Amino acid sequence: MSKRALRIGMIGYQFMGKAHSHAFRDLDFFFDLPVTPVLQAIAGRNEGAVRQAAEQYGFASYDTDWRRLIERDDIDVIDIVTPNVAHAEMAIAAAQAGKHVICEKPLAMTVEEAVRMREAVEKSGVRALLCHNYRYAPAVQLAKRLIDDGRLGRIYHVRAQYLQDWIMDPNFPLVWRLRKEVTGSGALGDIGAHILDLARFLVGEVRDLAATMETFIKERPLGEMSGGLEARADRSQTGNVDVDDAVAFLTHFESGALGVFEATRFAAGNRNGNRFEINGERGSLRWDLENMNLLHVYLEDDEPGLQGFRTINCTEPVHPFADKYWPAGHIIGYEHTFMNLFATFFKSLVDGSPCKPDFEDGVRNQCILDTVERSAATKQWETVEYR
Ligand SMILES: NC(=O)c1ccc[n+]([C@@H]2O[C@H](COP(=O)([O-])OP(=O)(O)OC[C@H]3O[C@@H](n4cnc5c(N)ncnc54)[C@H](O)[C@@H]3O)[C@@H](O)[C@H]2O)c1
Image (cartoon, rainbow, N blue to C red; front, side, top):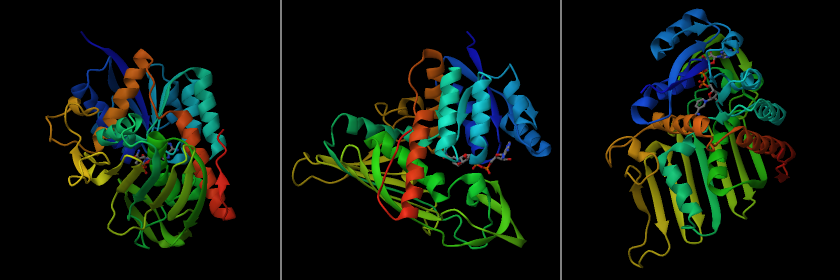
């Protein structure tokens, strides 16, 4: 029996456009969902490029105006994979048109924008998903299960880092991710938002924090992203970098745990080092995206003499999502985090089950990002004011 089609309209078509399209295409292959995602239309400003993206990713049609896409009555879900500056306007318009919304992170440029997005979704009654996909790595889901089951006891420490190095060359151009008016903040919102989401998912809310931010290279040639994290430079003109290259902050969690966070794009040799270690009274957990199938687990009540971190390859059928893919030991990758996320969201659209992270998570994340910037400016501990 054929399943109901869930018709997707995507806005933007580069790095995340490719990641999301791939996930949508493969979902039916691995998951038994009550709906089938259909790549209905894709929008972008450059006709040649968006036509090519439609052909490559498999969209049935394309448009050069995202507003026309949102107005179409043969689209159920709008997927926003554009730079951060466009998220609010597009998400609010999509919600007002009665479309479910998928939005890339960080949710918005400011707390005000994020709150308006949450309100638009609540008012129209549609569902919204925020793409913090790393929550959906099976090893991270197992970490959550162990913490929730009390296997670590009370949590004392959260140590989270997101370390990259792709803008270290001073000639790497001033792409949108380095321009405040398009991105909001630098390493903070781009990758710091991810580790904050992981920490909130695993340990709970941040109460207050003390932060510092640094911009190491203050002037760069102009240029633009050309796919993935690559860029094209125009060496004849330069501009000023007005966002952070790196950020570090200490936090208290509402639970009483202490957090240490670091996000930087200047950690040479770290291509995509999204890592955390969590220490509790009865054990510890460690995870690193670059070896994302593995969860390192230390349990205090292991037999003396045999204590130590054990390495769990989270590909056994008992591990979250692992039964959807391959036999044990046959590892999965980056793209599967998106598939797990979207499968959960699409199922929730049909059966009404909860699906996080949503725009409420986005608002909370944005409130923390905002507090980090405030603390870096005042050089004081600042309390997070959730809206
Ligand atoms: N979840 C993750 O792991 C992850 C990873 C990378 C990026 N992101 C997020 O995804 C979003 C997109 O990032 P990316 O890396 O794909 O960027 P990108 O530069 O590779 O692609 C951006 C796309 O948006 C299009 N675009 C820009 N402004 C537009 C407008 N006004 N109207 C229509 N289209 C427009 C561009 O033409 C391009 O196709 C950002 O919010 C970013 O923070 C998330």
